[in-house]
Image 1 (cartoon, rainbow, N blue to C red):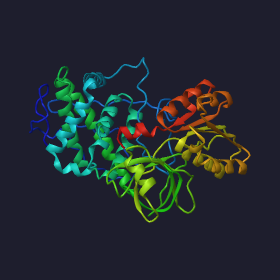
Image 2: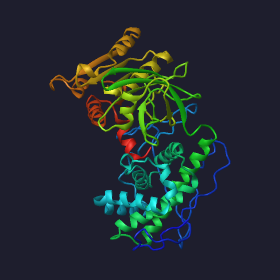
Image 3: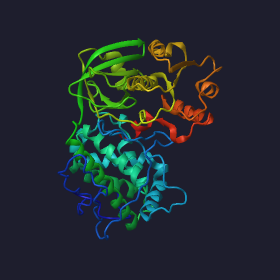
Image 4: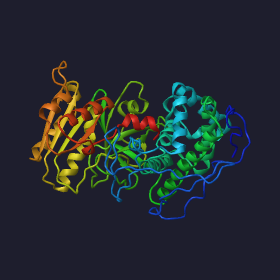
Length: 462
């Protein structure tokens, strides 16, 4: 595979080179034999590459989105965004220092880097164009941002590897293969060397080669292992379409084969009308004995997938589902109380969590704050109130913003529990941020707050 042959002056258009990013052979192992240390490929003329060290936690991080481990029965290929770096006292590795210097240099021209990266990729490797949506405005910087996010967290190995493994599994639905990674690495180096020319040199290029080799190998190995146990995607037939409001629909689908997931998770979904455009939607119920999957979808301006699902989809239509994803799941090893905050269609995973608690028979208190801008947006309040009537441990508080007199964060501060509850937050990113702040204000620690920001995950590259 061609690669840039210069270091400080490559404009990204030169060819030749020595296959810097050629991946290793895929493992012929079982799904449980992922390497703990990914194999690395040295840069030309460099010594053996160094392995990054990364330390993470098993609990979700306070910033958006969170992360929790999921049981083996339902693998969690969630491409969560690494949310922290090593503690301030930890010294950054030489590669991390060089990587972050590059990031600082390209930050003011990120859009140009993105455009140039894709131009290189599609000109040099036109066969890869079919893996992307026809309209690239919906794709934009997802792939590049995912790579840069991973590179920027090169010193936090545990979180980085988990992120990359989930990303590699999730990318199977696009048809990504090991032989595609060298092309992406080549064009990444080409774009960075052009727009970070002020700081670019041979040492920095070697750091990026080592970093990308690590990134690609972890993703390749994870995808290969996942291929042994799960399909790249599932087909599902829409069996019910309930238009709750003019712009909110409850869509129920039957997958073509068993679809394991956990309450509180979400999936990526593709409609037949917009091929290769995937959007995230939370499961609106706990796993059901009949295998049906339900989603709450709100049509948003310029939302191709959401408008298709709300206004065009009908029973009998076939959609595609990616693997289950997400960290906002219930820890059934404890009996801690739960406070759940859901805004708009963010009530969907909250409803699933309540059902999950009920099915496990735990006698734990659960308080739900259901936020809406007006009564019209409380489209699922009847369902939540029926659940409250059936379970004495559940309390549902609808919170409608009436001319700014009582907003959701204020309601949480005034009525929320002030004990060691586990907290779950779902909704638009702004609501998640304000909800997390309110939960912290009433004394709930960071490590007990779980949330997944769908918007940020979509921007990162699932």
